[in-house]
Length: 289
Ligand code: C2E
Ligand code: MG
Ligand code: MG
Ligand code: MG
Figure 1 (cartoon, rainbow, N blue to C red):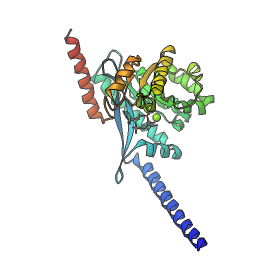
Figure 2 (cartoon, helix red, strand yellow; figure 1 turned 90 degrees about the vertical axis):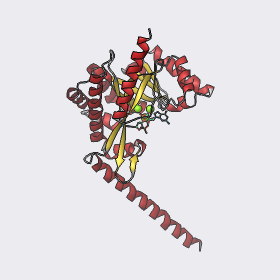
Figure 3 (cartoon, protein in one colour; figure 1 turned 45 degrees about the horizontal axis):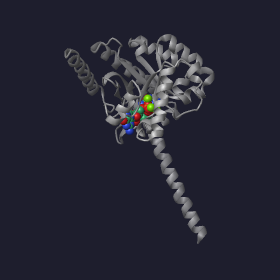
């Protein structure tokens, strides 16, 4: 009897694994075709100067409009794209798309400091031999101000690729491209890389901002902001959802932020409207004086 059950259990387990594997394979297949079928979209989330709420740039965030599944979030397909190597052509596409869009915006909305565009770079993409050459080519094809391209990498990328990372970062820096550490505070405990590598910006991870009601998280955020300033780095707080969080961050002298409180990531038309509004608010503000 017990043996029988065990056997049945095994069969059930096996078939569940099987259908999971099939589903994953299917998704992988779909992912391979998604680029050709133009199913990827970029959404843009404003990054604001907290004091003025003025938009200083955007983070480009990739969306996959799947014909049957609908919108697939990046957490579901970026890891798969990494595993299959699809991240390389996808990464090239989205970098070009983001720079092409930013070129329009910089022409339409000229600022003293040009609007910036932040692009997430995954580990495997960064590891490519021709990564730096690709960036250079993209900036030739879409000649945005070089310092307005901000590449976001995580601490993990720096730690995993220690031998090659220094040279690549040096080349990117020489090109004028900026570098941000994404999800700062969630990775490795060693901070020494901040001295040795030409990092420009720390992005305080959303998990700390979210819990800022608690004194511990508040202290962590405060410490990261101070660390950034002492090292002459910019600091951006991620995931600001409430006015109270924005206010606390301003009090800590955190200059920049992004989050649902200011805007969710939106498609480019909506982002253009936000820019137009941000600019007219500033003009109104200036004419008051
Ligand atoms: P990330 O780079 O840390 O991006 C910020 C994520 O936080 C985005 O999620 C954004 O929609 C979300 N977010 C922003 N403000 C808020 C807020 O106030 N509350 C909450 N709850 N969430 C907020 P998204 O777009 O789902 O992307 C998730 C992650 O996927 C990104 O984290 C990034 O690591 C990765 N990713 C997204 N697009 C790309 C891409 O084009 N290339 C690569 N390599 N990775 C990407
Ligand atoms: Mg990011
Ligand atoms: Mg992040
Ligand atoms: Mg991230």
